[in-house]
Length: 167
Length: 234
Image (cartoon, rainbow over all chains, first blue to last red):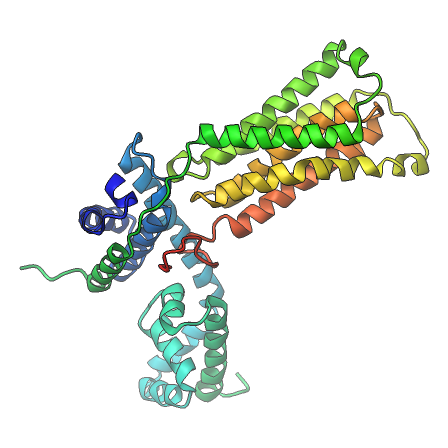
């Protein structure tokens, strides 16, 4: 880690490769599915990168690393749970209802196709493919707040198309 | 050969990206060095502003009162302890437990409350009481720079407990400011001390905690905010 702090890219690559397996197992033990485990793993690696200047070689590396891993894992899980509580009562149930109603999937696909491209992409990535909002925001180059607004508008439009305005 | 876990390719890409972004970083100073720097800053502020405000005329006599001296020592000790914990909180594996922070701040407020409430009530006129507002302003002035210095020092680290670190920074700066104000202000009246000396401390600590919660965790990938590292990797 001292070499990493000195800017040694080879040492850094080796270190990241070495800790990735342990971190993946650590995060998986917290009951995440594979996709979320990988998301959290990438968050931990990024946090490690941003905090690397705080590591003191006189102290244990494991303590430093797992303090970050525990916090980032728990923090992300808590935020994910809060997000799920906010979002579950509205659109996903309705999407599921639409999906389960005979030709629902066809109707959903048709409804999705009528959305503006940015809204359709946001809904597909977050709700249909289960990606993390932060990750999608990073991929699409918008803030998380803007992404949530985009998803909300998409839900509103989908609800109108699938369930009617009087629902 | 077993299939790689889903998403592991993206993780491999992340690792490659991070490794390629490796640059020399300046290691964070040890908490002891940072505490020494902060103490020097705090001492400078107290000396400069103390000289400007002037010490209370009966200070020599007050320093012979055990209760007065004890309350000041306890408050100053709490302030230094808060500063130590705040600076430690800037390092991921040194962050204090929530109960430690709450106990320290609770004890600090309790000591100050008891010490101030034990004083005679003093003026009963609202107008006279309101005239004491400069003490609140002076408390804020004494605490401002030390609190900012602590918050900046924490932000240059990587705290995992942003709100607690902010509370500790506020507690450190405002506890020392409260001590300084007891050496400056000659009023030993209960309601003046509670309203214009203690309340600003409570407000300052709460404000610092709110600022900490907002800005000190911006480096975390799971929080909103801008990265603090200048390496271009979010």
